[in-house]
Length: 278
Ligand SMILES: Nc1ncnc2c1ncn2[C@@H]1O[C@H](COP(=O)(O)OP(=O)(O)OP(=O)(O)O)[C@@H](O)[C@H]1O
Ligand SMILES: [Mg+2]
View 1 (cartoon, rainbow, N blue to C red):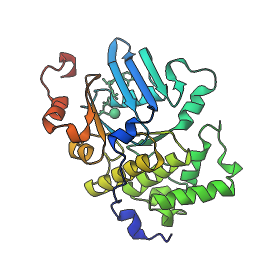
View 2 (view 1 turned 120 degrees about the vertical axis):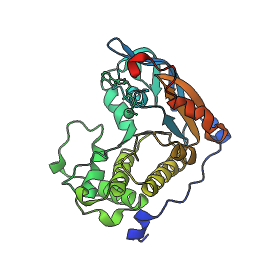
View 3 (view 1 turned 135 degrees about the vertical axis):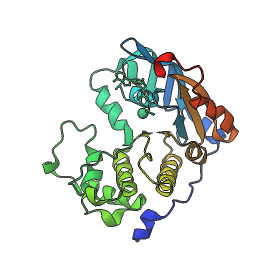
């Protein structure tokens, strides 16, 4: 396949999104029940129930401080779980045995607002670092196999940016860097992708194209993608289901096509906020 500069700027064609019925025929890859997270005296998540099914893109909404990042962190063992159960790709996150934490984290591809690339390294090497997940303390000098390099190039092609492979990551625009970060996550062969505000630093057109890309990956690779967003229209346009947190409780969980904007607006109501939050 030839790769042109246009490919990176093109808005990705919507993937054939699996129907809710198709999705629900599979077992959930993530099952969260009665999750509670406390930081000191503060309860940050309380009674959260969540299932994520292979192939679906779920938008996670909620005001700042409602617990979106904490929920994502709880799926990879980075949050202190006080109560409830969290199962991710067969791992019991509340009761991980020795060595399982590394396996869990290598099963979960993560995409962040600030891309988290290594600026001075080439785009290709940044993608290759995704292969080091689960490999222990890593050594870039050790080199990568030919098969790994070919796969990294294929993934860069898939995200429309192979023509930048040898450029240093710092020379890319934000939208391009986020595509590299997505390719890096795919290099892990993830069973789940968590994207915490992946488009908050991008202009609206690039935001659309990055979210379309994530949704097509969910549908084509049959993995759940959980993506936190602050922009309602983006969530409505690019998700199969929306879950909404309010003060750490899950108050919305429904198919995107069934939700109306009024329900979603309650996530951002200032009324009956705790005094502490004002
Ligand atoms: N490591 C921590 N120690 C103490 N409190 C924390 C910690 N991490 C998060 N919190 C608190 O937990 C609450 C939820 O934070 P979280 O980062 O999950 O919110 P968020 O929904 O992701 O917000 P934003 O939209 O601003 O990213 C906040 O009140 C925050 O101060
Ligand atoms: Mg956050």
